[in-house]
Amino acid sequence: MEKEKNDEKKECCKGKKWNNTKAGSSAGAGAVYCLGLIGAAVYYIQNASSFWDGVVGLLQALVWPAMLVYNLFESLNM
Image 1: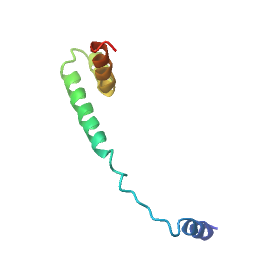
Image 2: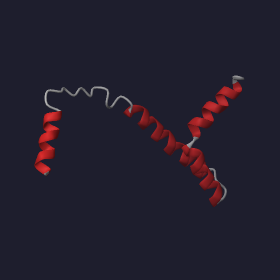
Image 3: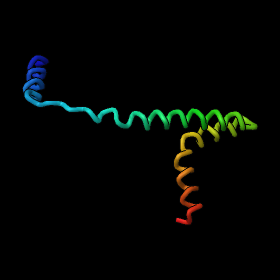
Image 4: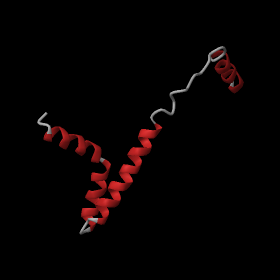
């Protein structure tokens, strides 16, 4: 049974060329977001005056790009 499934997969993909040149094109954006997330978390935790301020700071660190865009549009009167 298992051998039949493997044979079917081989037949299905036979003759196809897989071109994944764009597979890692968004990896740089993910790395920049991750560094921004870490930096924002460190900033908010350092400036927290209590434990719950630190917890709220971690939540803010997760959504800082959305807050940035919102404030940008607000300042541009959009």
